[in-house]
Length: 166
Image (cartoon, rainbow, N blue to C red):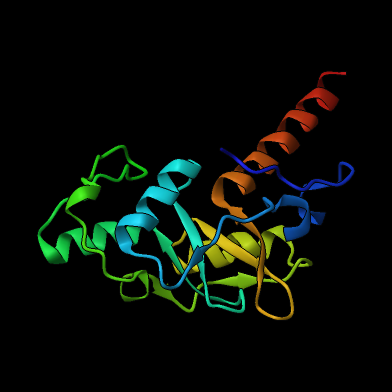
């Protein structure tokens, strides 16, 4: 289940912002969710990561496949979770411990107006594949993934190619 991407009228690549690229609504994980249930939620949603929110809906972290891989490596167990590179990890052996013990705290967040170049640089600098678009109250309202940035680049390249063919 892939959420829709918010897109406005076609604009030049470097004029695009987080608001143009973000996927919304965002699947979120309540902070009290067990690791096993969080893995199931990500799997059912067809995504590899999601923001973790507190009771007020404020983003307090992010849980991604990298967090599962890190946990599996430190605990020496496998959890049935499909990592981005295709490795299957076994969920049923995962503990019922709350995800706040495994999530990445202080996720990279951006405003609606953040330009595409800055989005890409934040991902590169932090070695991550998603940034969270948050409102003033810190509530996640969208997510921009590295795939969204690459798709915008591909669209711009196709458009430029069509113009040069004329």
